[in-house]
Length: 270
Image (tube, rainbow, N blue to C red; front, top):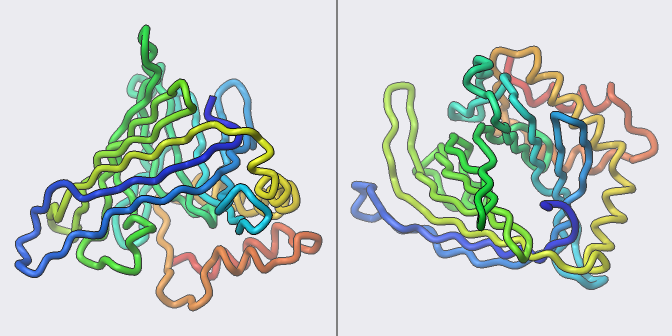
């Protein structure tokens, strides 16, 4: 029910400010509409992988980019928790904590981890939804305009609707140090995924088929790293070319697991 071609509307607004800075300025409201192809990349009895491919418009002038990915896993005991400063910690749960629950692991456009959480899918007479709270890095839409917070505590709610699905968020913007968390502001997110005819996502579908194998190497590399590390730290400050761009520039026909591993390793802090 979450796969296919969608007209997506992103809406964010700050709702409460707690910062003690007298010069504090709230982020401007965000209201954007794009199209996304959500591909069923992997499925088995316990795991579902959904890859989002962003397409800026439904016509031939559109720009296409690989967007976020969400992995769903049933009774998953191995999650990663975002700490701060581009560091993630392995979080091992007990079987009793995850009984009957699904984890959602979200990954960035370069397949680097972003956030993960666990919760129940709830089925009532009128609603189907899943919800969770977890920490994540600074919102991508604010990386160039905000430095006063470094953790986004996300209240995620995903609900299946008659038009498609809704991703509703109640978020806290937090400045975190080793010693404390300071809540700077709160925001509301309301992102609608309205299902439309598959023809509107043809450019995204074609792009993903062409680039699928390359990004599978990348996806597998990050999965392996998360499986063997107690924690994972990434250095993004000393690399002038983004990881996504480096991988995107690789020739689809000549890329292999070794090349991908060398590139990703250059971003890892030992």
